[in-house]
Image (cartoon, rainbow, N blue to C red; front, side, top):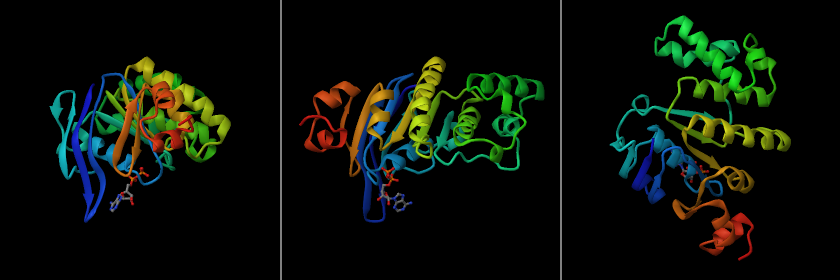
Length: 237
Ligand code: ADP
């Protein structure tokens, strides 16, 4: 589903953290918001998810004005760096949880959990508890739980920042392939230039609440719009 962010502001008291952002994200696009800590990436993502309300402007999902819709009406899944798994549940129960809430029949739940676990290469771990798994495996469980109900939009906030460099490289490729195969529109937040360059269809480089450049990775690298973009990407000015 396409997402339109239309002149969106977010203010906390006198502090403006998102400063009139407008961007159209295409159906099936892998869109990355890249920028230093505090530039408003997470806040923008949370407004798309419905976890924060925009102070001004609109957010359209699949052509419908969702600016004030509750999160559960947005057909969106989210994944974070801290996994958010339930420690007392098995991997199977963790992945099954969103389907249980939606009252799917047990056989249908089992089928979907097994299919999604297979996609993420964690079929052998369904009986374990999260504490008995490595960081990379836990992140796969968290991705499986997000994807098990076939969302149309997937929002990820620094999902790899707790992993070591080698595993990050593996997971970059896996995540990109997974969401591309599933055709899910993805917004991915990171402060890591390599992640952005290697995964994005388009990158939005953010600074102090503004999207200073929105373009495909090569264009951001070859033709940075400002000195800030050049510095941040590490491309020649
Ligand atoms: P990023 O994801 O780019 O690191 P954030 O969107 O998390 O940036 O934060 C942007 C700015 O908004 C930061 O200065 C942060 O302190 C501030 N901020 C975020 N949430 C709140 C809040 N609930 N109340 C006040 N300030 C906030």
